[in-house]
Image (tube, rainbow, N blue to C red; front, top):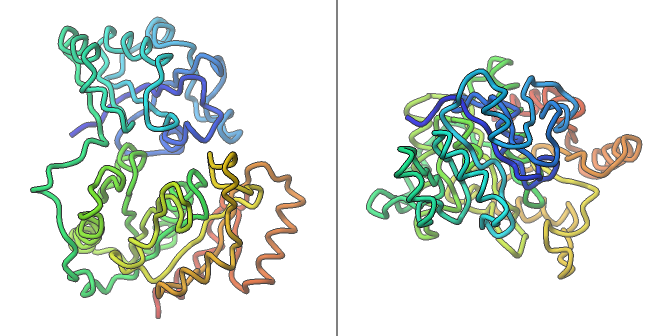
Length: 353
């Protein structure tokens, strides 16, 4: 099993949404023990304080060479903790990866560009006796599944955390829900569907965008049934991807249809006007009421709205939160500000139905 101590590389993007994999690892996980972060712009600070003002004892170093000189022991892995635009590795990142391998670290990468197919990286990895591990490499189709309908026999309640855009905090809210439910006596499991979820070490899941489209529904069904059979939870949470109406990669209906999830927590960033990285083409994020209506038409119910705090001051966020509560008559929560515990009664009621 891949696990152990690691440093996480963000290439100057630690304070941006592109580093959401690093952010997820800083907030917790079972697969890697993060010893440090490598970022040539934001070095010299505690990574947690830069992320959300909470010290986590994880220092940011300028380079992997600096880390290896200063840290008392060598980690096993160098994790590429940033999703570059287009999923491709920029040339500015190559030197750090090469230096990591020369220090004897194996590379974990979740990009769409496979480092194990790069001739230079392959040669250096062979010389240094380290591994190049591309977690987004598709599995052989012989091991994938078509949707069969067996999931319709699963009685365990399922809630999926969807969002109105990419990189909006769906996985973080899902993790907070997982922790809060288990702390409240609701035995809960989370289905990961992205590279960061895999890196955090959740027991059940698959990487959605590394799966050929014909098999997505079947793989959703498989992992939910596996989770239900092996873990016997009271509740299954499903991490969403992208959004239902994002033209660059619409996603979400699969969890409602193939996953038969009947409950939705909807994550939204009120300060965003356009879909992430689609500002130049003028792709507006549709109104919340439209998103909620589409979810209803898929046969599911939005149980609560959770808000992303980015680029909105507190007083405006408070007013917006109250406005949504009046408009939709469902709980509206700010996970990073107030925690997720206020949603536990809603979840208990959903489970009782």
